[in-house]
Image 1 (cartoon, rainbow, N blue to C red):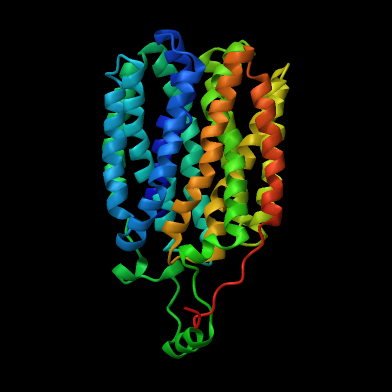
Image 2: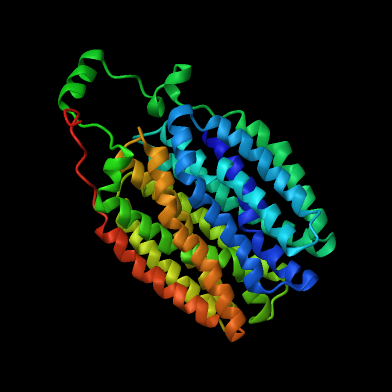
Length: 404
């Protein structure tokens, strides 16, 4: 399960999330579209996640994530094939809506729901292992950048669709709903004796429902903190290559190498999370990562030498790799796994603030001022401010089984 999810994350990160900045830089030159227009596609990608998130969560809580993930792979691959044929900005948006739907249905959200149902004691370790795929996808970026330069964006997009279908569908077929469905147990440990389970059921607590989770401060604080982190992550994914090309004089290929360096540090962050995630307070680790996101983006914004660019890669990459897997792990720790799909889906309606706002703020302010400096500075300060949301997000008291 973890290996299949890791592979699906690798495909999405390499073909879409890390590579989008390369498409933006090339399409801006080839089609003459401005940064605001191209950032709109990134906004569509994230707004769609917020719109269908609750519905996806409801479906997965009742029927499992496996069917959703398989349909998502088909749409993700088909969207790239459509992208290779577009001629207008409207067609570009239409192709990206299909890609966005596919990405949401076979991406981070449903795969996390699947793994949350399989792990409890080692949940942070499992989700960190899953994020290795997301991180390692950045290694793909120089290859995508080279393909965009030498073969063009149309050939690259079509080849991406074929790759996503050929590799993604076999991986999606591995996903199962719950360990109990195939005779396994959570964490792979022996089930407790029946007498111990009966005592726990009689006197213990139960998981939160989605309605109960919404009433806790922790739900809102975690969602806001996650959203503020994505101000930086979204802006970097969409605009970092363009910033390095225009302000620092890098070629698209050289800028893609910097993104690969971010990826290498991200893998380091994932491994740190793999080691410490189940041992220390996740929310405080996430708060420290928010400061690293902000300082990293400031380093890139005001870089006047390669040293500052490397510092950006280190701070942002480690923070992303360490913090990312904890976002869903904390919610599962706090609210349980019974309604986790719906809870995560509802949280996307708040997280979208950062997912949409980061790329749009950076793009609009760059069009107005002529550089990314003002937009990146604002987003970095928002990320630093967002660290307080995690500091305040303490674990809520779980409801008793006797409560309705």
